[in-house]
Image 1: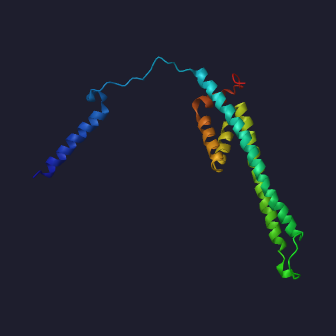
Image 2: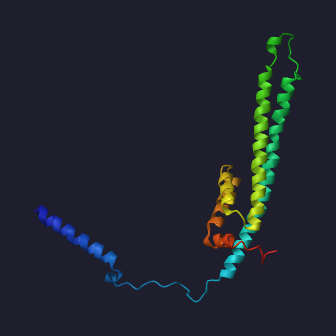
Length: 188
């Protein structure tokens, strides 16, 4: 039978060895790993061209996405037209009694919901188009990140666009590009 003190001493011994091994890499006697090909230099010009290309593509996709949102939000106008028709009693009731007719509040509800959907869609579409222009001009990076976060709500296309926009705009090289306010060049 092993006593408690011997067991604690054994645990302490292995714990100390473990901590020592990870605090000093030479105790493993392993070779230090080197990069696979250290002769390839890091090209900041190539990185800048990639960043410019990514920002150009994101700008175009934001323009397209903003136009699609604005176009599809026009479907809210159908509700506005139906609501106005209900308010003006365009749809005649099948019977002659007033009990079968729709109340005008129902029509105003359609008008309100349709108007809100349309205006909200046009607003988000316009903000996406404006974000595309800002991406092309390398201005207002934080605003573009906020619009990208809002785009993440509309799954799946908006989420993909928002995530890719945030990935590009968070890079250090893109941050430096926005800080210098350098006009776009090198990519036509």
